[in-house]
Length: 166
Image 1 (cartoon, one colour):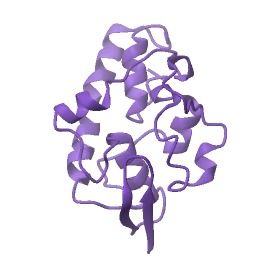
Image 2 (image 1 turned 135 degrees about the vertical axis):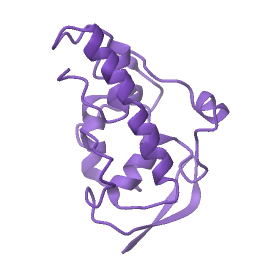
Image 3 (image 1 turned 135 degrees about the horizontal axis):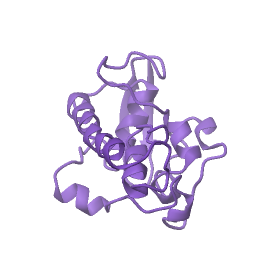
Image 4 (image 1 turned 90 degrees about the vertical axis):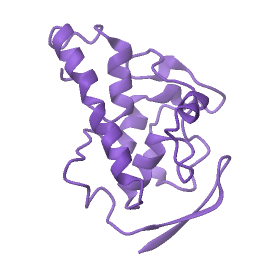
């Protein structure tokens, strides 16, 4: 077991323990299509997400990552469109757990690394609820038409769903 101490712009002195091997021991209902490193390389969240977290996560995650430390740049997203709501929006909805103040993707990065947390069930439930968007893409788009519903496809990618092969 390894303890991680977080000191970044949103958390100071937050500690968690890695109890599983990275990428292993997932809940059987949680089957993301991409790792956090793959998502960062593909282009998510306008390149802004977690640019100040390099000390917490493996440096390999940031190799070839599409990042924009100065601010969101939708052109860095895989589908080239903005598909994000503001953090304030997520906070107002009550979807942010205090231990993961950046939201679902931060939770996923920590879960992937091996942290297990009381909020895991809720977050996995939120991930599963995104299936409805994949179903809408399948229903309304021709196979491999990546220009169809680009915003929805980008949102799915943010949640580690593969909307490219739909």
